[in-house]
Length: 188
Image: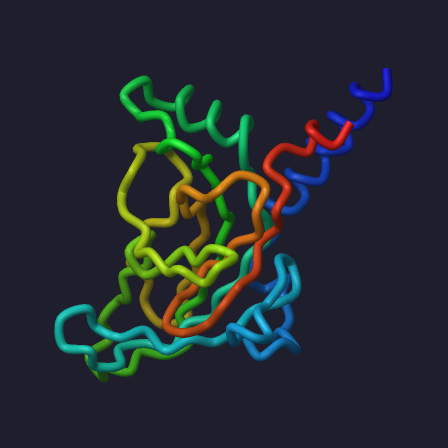
C-alpha cells in the first residue's frame, strides 16, 4: 500500500513539474555559476547563445529546468520508446532533463531563428568533468527547436550520468544543478 501511494505521489509530482511553461518561472536568484548553480525548479537564467561555427552571439535565451527522470525509469522510457535505443554505457544511467527555453532577443538583426537542442548543453559530473551531450537516443519530446524572437520551446535533454550522483547541465557557461536520486523507489 505504501509503495502504491508513493508511486501515485511521484506520478503527480512529475506530471505537474513537466506541465509548466517558461512563463511560470521567475528569474533565478542564483548566479548560475559553478559555485552557485541554479537548482531544479528554482527559476530561469538568461544565456547568450553563440553560433557554433563563428562564435558570434546570435540570441539571448531564457533557460529553466523543471525536473529530471533518472535510473530505472529513464532507462525503461528510453528503451521502450525505440527498440533500437541502446542501453546506457557501463556504470551510467540515462537522465531525462526537462528544459524550457524562450528566445528573448535575436542578436543577428536578420530575424533568424535560434537552434536549441542537446548539442547546446554539456553534462558535468560531481567531480566537475565536462562532456558535451551527444545524440544517443531517438525519442519524442526531446528538445529540438528553431525558435524566433519571442518564441518558446520545451522538451527533454537525454544524457548519461553516474548513478546516485548529482550532476550539472551547462549551457553557454550557465550552470544548473540536478539531483542525485536515480530512482525514487530505491529510497523505500
